[in-house]
Image 1 (cartoon, rainbow, N blue to C red):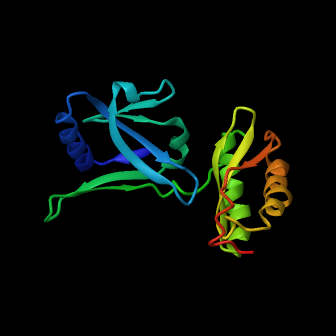
Image 2: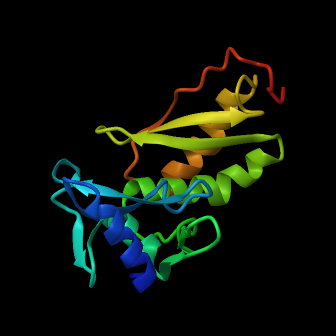
Length: 191
């Protein structure tokens, strides 16, 4: 899954020793499988643990991993290198931004895959983009448009004839899409 070098374990263990209530570290990726993916390491305290988290004991510390992030942490490396300024912790997760989806992937990951790999390249021609805000309990994909799509007069056509049709064809579990974009701001609109 992820490699935490001995130097990184020493550094993290030293930081953890200064925290009274830290149990270890929690490793997760915000927006995994998207261009905005960000790999994070945070102190893990009792209230931070989720029942689904995967616990792994390293030689010098314990780490908990958010299950949804695990496939994106494959081949990840956490290292620490001392330098003139003290040192630097680096996290390299080459698969964090690469979508790894299949029929058994969470609905959110499958929708993001389609948005970032099929829909956004088309919207980029007009300076636009769309991102997933959430999947509602009734299986609607809530979307946020940006760039040239925000305030564009053709957004309803794009939403219904392009985005929604593509998503419903490829992810039949969705009930539909909803747009939460404030389209009154037309400052960057394409049309």
